[in-house]
Image (tube, rainbow, N blue to C red; front, side, top):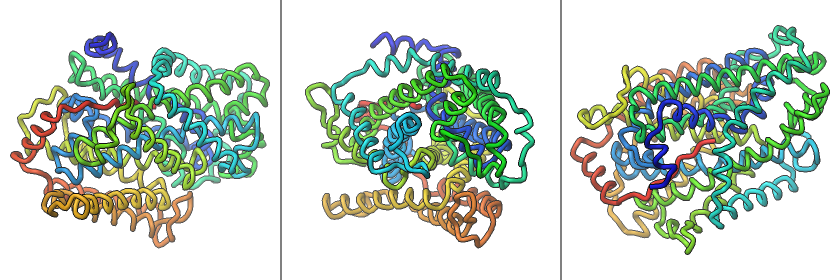
Length: 537
């Protein structure tokens, strides 16, 4: 056991809080305030609060599940135990997509801020140019190459730099307001943003993306002395502290804006250097010294996060290979102990995201939707395991689990809806494509019977995905939703709130029984999973 492992096994509430908060504060804060202001203006303060609440409900669900499955990579395995192999394989694919799509986001973050100093990576609309796309693919290749050489010092630096990651945004709040303070901006042009922008900003402005690091406290829950007490404190504490920081940044950004920047309304907010918004404002008001610190942070921190996710992605592939959800050859290690084929798959899959989502905001919308979908299975698993394995050991036991799980499931579906029809369509095509691959692999290549697919425990996904897509398709076209305006934004939210309990009921009715769940659990234990890290930005 390494020294790090020993520290983690002795982690107290401060250790959990520190780990979670350090992971939550990532690259999202560099762009979130601008993107949220464009959609919701001063009401973006409410958007951050909504995002924090949604994350808390999801976090509490996974707090119980993670202590039941304390091994790394538990999400892949817990789905198998609850709903069988087919759903488990599908969710390993969704989780893989959630991981491989983050490094491209961080790479685009670097190029977006760099574009302010050396234009050419983005066009006037903020989309990657051919040079930008080639540079993004090359930069992603460098990050992957570092993993090939088994270099781990970047992770150590990222851990040591946690205080730096927290200090920089906090200091930015006070420096912005010290150099430029126009409190009247908070009450200016309030009628220029649609009410729906308060909600769409949660999914598309980088808000939900900025909170997803809560996973770290949960990942360590099984190794702390008192998870029943420490996990809730760490979860609530880290999310609330992050919320205070993000609200401070949002307020400071709004009041630091020159009043002429919003003369045309918040949806037409404009000022020089918007691709690197915080640094641009700092430069314009004379805080040049801190602007350069932001430029430095905008390169180093995102690349460190990208490295960690690239490190974690192959381990998801390895776990999927163990459970039959990916070819076992992808788990092959080279002489340095590096899963080189899985790294190549990580690069190819990650680079592919640059083409349908060629900007930071577009890609963040996709990552938010994919990641939230990967978490949306949590409420289903928790309630089903409570039904079929009521006496299983639960170091942390969630109270009011039915209500919390229902709210978490509805909130997840709302966030997916808020990201718009285009993102949802691409997401469901990726999932559908994997299902086709799985069927061909199982039936044509391996020539196994249909009964071995466990499809009877996964069919509820068909009405779930179809209903979600139809509501998005017939929903509004405004605020980037991309629907055909058959009904309004809030009608779509109401429909999702109505169908979500029905989908949850179907999912619970189609899960494994007690005997089957125990058999799958025994199978997983027999595999002696190598595990996978679950790092979060």
